[in-house]
Image (cartoon, rainbow, N blue to C red):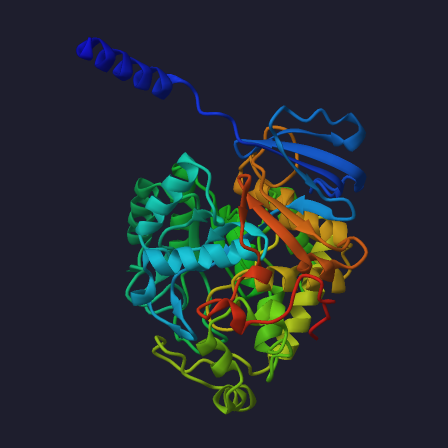
Length: 475
């Protein structure tokens, strides 16, 4: 009898293990829905999330909530897709010091959680990842992440002695053959994209990637069916890279106005302005950052960062122009003439909007002066300041960026897609600054802490402000 009972017990356990787990279902209802596709917002909407995916979306009047579902009443709220930042760098900073030694699993995940807290539920890292990022990505894609989804270029292609990458990480190349080998190595690791840098830091560096090397990198990327995205500054370089087949640019042309030839080339070739990084140019033009008392900013950065940003050393660097950032072997005139660069970037962005070029949203956040999550909201504000509508800015940061990534499972609120969502207290279509009024964030249906529940590297009671705070334009 004892053996019979034991056998029945084992059989019961085995049967329970074989049964599918009960579905996790959550219903959001009563909100105004901004689905990310550019369609008009829909009042009094509802959606059903099951095991992290959207299984139904439509008018609340047609909602048929499944038995046992958790229901969240969002009457008076606004729901939009999670933002996607198409140009970031993660894990390489400690306060305001950049060093590859800081690239640990802990620091990477801290950054990805900060992005998610700001409603940025997906990021594309352009060329400065250690290989451990592939483990993070694998785990995310095998399950339901509770931080920003990561897409990676691995280690980008840097010209020997030239601009780009992170010291101690990126292998520098000097010949087309070396460039092809570097691309082969990254493709073998399973990168999502290939990144290359073509710049000379405003003539501060005596060498710049040659066209023969960039051509080899782009062609090799395409042989592996990978797209290539390039850091550029000069108009002439942008044109040559398009002729070579580059798929997108990681920064705006900033040395002079874009001309009709470039715009026509981008349109005919389908070349993307992946990330104009307008907020980057703005940050570099400011002697004193006006958001140092803004809780939407201060909650997401470390105490050491705040201390540095408020210091006389930073103001001195801005006023005098040249500074030597930790980890760089040369002085960098970050702030010299940056106001002109900012306005050139804005004017060129306006020209690309008018021409109908493919436009994403990216910030280059992570290194000095650009902050995970926060800059995404600044970038959208600057897009609107430069003439786009709030709906267009949201679309560029959601479904358009998902289209750039080639990921059909994210970027909009539609049946079958991952429930990567941001709940807002105020309507961002009335004022794009209202993307800061974050009530809730979901990644794959998982509720994650918002920036208003975050106080990075400090006790939670050390930060002030709430999602009800009225956002202010910081410039």
